[in-house]
Length: 83
Image (tube, one colour):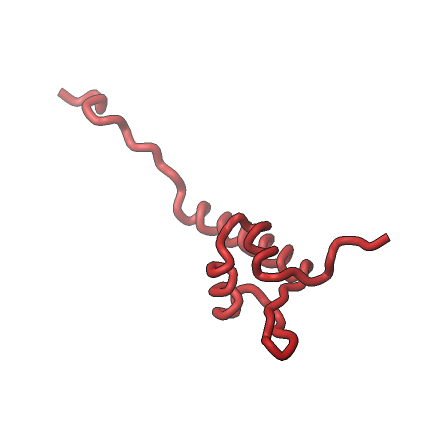
């Protein structure tokens, strides 16, 4: 019984994140998403555990952003109660 693969292609990662392979490649090249380069043609692979850690970090970063920039619903125009 084989479990889920340990390593994912950039296309696999793009599918998980619902983004493009180019965006995933940019994340890898910027060092935001750890990956390895294997083989003579230098194919990139992302370890599944690294992807999960990246996702959790993005949740934490997003929470920090939301906490620091709370959403404030603007009053609709013309309904401010001022005459």
